[in-house]
Length: 366
Image (cartoon, rainbow, N blue to C red; front, side, top):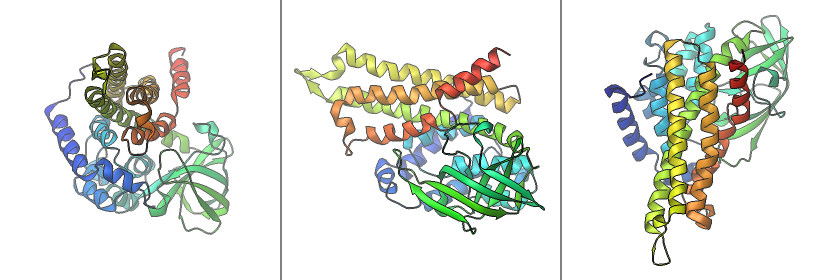
């Protein structure tokens, strides 16, 4: 498989890098950590104007065309800049579910146009990723559902138009749209290492009428969409790791010890090399998974390999960068810790390394 990006995708990468360099410098990343919304609405609107909120969706559905490989190019630049936005949660996950399930054309167009956001409420206090981890109770009523239980790590809730909730109904998973202002919702903002707007949401017999897809068949829709999201999170990790490599090399060249730059010492060179190798391998695995998804080929093992490698890279790149920078990297004035804290979240999000290694093993063993 040829992993050389064509001219169109190389141009997308250049435009995205210039855009995020201008609109999401690390000074803006720091400022948004204290912003209740967690992202810049002006940047989000411009991303929508550029067609990026509809990227990966058909023009007939309100999108701007393209596929997972195009999105992976964009996400690598998002990772480099640490640009905060609800793109993955709303445009990719919620938009992907709405497109696959059908029946919500108006809302889908609004999501892909950046006019509103729909954020997924999937993870639960048990921390298990996958359909078995969905335990929030859903009681099907005439044309609707009543929800009881708790969801954690729900992103960007303060500005969301809708919640996309996964609930357990019998032996299956049912998806439903819930108004964030619905009666019976208890919302608490969760402190987290990434400084992201994440919330714990408790459902006290919350009634919802907006079922998405067929009852108890929700994972058939959600699973493939989450595979796409895992590949894009992997691309985001690759971009962040490459930026950490640049920061580490620059510091190694400028920091002097014993009369010469620390980059002259082989031990420091090895630390930087470790980041470069891990990022390159994760990039190749990510591009392969994205290409297979676009071709409609069986991609589950490739997706698992990509996210497993990316999760390992998220951990390794941060550790090596800290070793190069030593104690300075832990100071809030340093840029390295901005990447470290987000990489820790991305490492675990959408399945950690262990989850995807087990999934890959299951696939290989048939």
